[in-house]
Length: 124
Image: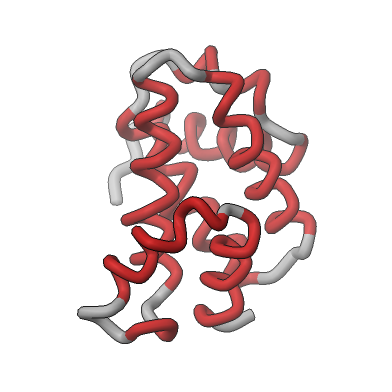
C-alpha cells in the first residue's frame, strides 16, 4: 500500500479529520505526504486527546480502524500502525491499562510487543 491510499483510508473512515488532514498536508507533499507524518500528526493527537480527557469509549472506533489496517497484513500499513500510532500513544499515555480493553487482537499484540520491548530497556 502506498501513502496516498493509506491516507485516503483515514479520511474515508473519519471524515471529521479531513480539514485537519488538508491543513497538515497542503504545505508538505499534499496527498503524497507520508503516512507516518499524517497518522502521527492527526490520528495520534486525536486519540490522545480523547484518552487524556477520559473519553476511552470514544477511542474504540479509532482502534477498530487500526485493527482493520493490521488485518490487511500490508507491510507499510503495519509499520505506520506500530511505530507511529501505537508507539506514539504508549509513549504519551499514563494509564495504558485503560486502553487495552478497547484494542482488537492484532492491535493488542502489537501494543504488548511494544510494551515488552520498552520494559527490556530498548531505545530507538
